[in-house]
Image (tube, rainbow, N blue to C red; front, side, top):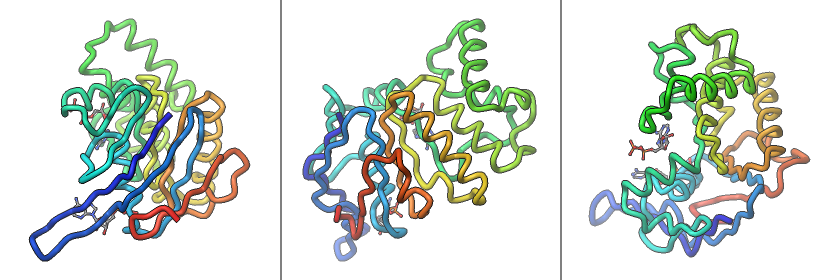
Length: 222
Ligand code: ADP
Ligand code: ADP
C-alpha cells in the first residue's frame, strides 16, 4: 500500500515567488493497483511521482510505502529503497547513448556488483521479456524510439521492483508504439505490479485494465 498523507510541495524561488506544485494531496494506492494521474502540463504530476519515489522531500505531509515512511528516510536509505522497490520509466528514456543495449540494462545492477552469471541471467530474462534480445550488442543511439523505449523498460525491471512509476511514457512515441507500450503495461499489471502512470495521453483514459484515472489540477486531486 502506498499512502500519500496531506502531501504538499512548495517550490520557493525567492521570498515573493512561490509555486505550490502539490497541495494537500491525500491518496491511497493498493498493491497491484494501476493508477493513471491525468492532468495538463504543470499540474503537479511529476512532482507527485518524485515525492512517492522519495526523490524529493515534501514541504509538509508524508509518503508511506508498506512499512517505510519514505519521505522521512535519510537520502542513502531512500536511494536504497528506490533501488530495491521502484522501477522508473521516463519519457526521455534516460539511456546512455554511447553504450550498448546490454550495458544500459545492466547499469542499475552496478551498486550490487553481481557475479557475471547472475548478471547474464537477469539480462537474458529482461531482454527476452521485452523483446530486445536480438539487439543486445547494438549501440543505443542507433536504435529506433520504440526500441529505446523497450531498453528503458527492460532496465527498469532488472531489480524486479514491485512498484513502477512512469512519467509521460508515450510522449515521444507514435500511435502504434504507444499501443505497444500499453500492451507491455498490461503485462506488468498481470504480473501484479503496482503501477502509477502520469500522462496527458488520452490513450490511457479508458483502458479496461486501469483501476483508477485520477485527475490532477493545480497541484490538487479533483
Ligand atoms: P507536470 O508533471 O504535471 O507537468 P510538475 O510537477 O512538473 O507538473 O510541475 C508542477 C509545478 O511545479 C509547475 O508549476 C512547475 O513549474 C513547478 N516546478 C516543478 N519542479 C520545480 C522545481 N524544481 N523548481 C521550481 N518549480 C518547479
Ligand atoms: P544513488 O543515490 O545510489 O545514485 P538514486 O537515489 O539517484 O541512487 O537512485 C536510486 C535508483 O532510482 C536508481 O537505481 C535508479 O534506478 C532510480 N532513479 C532515480 N532517479 C533516476 C533518474 N533520473 N533516471 C533514472 N533512474 C533514476
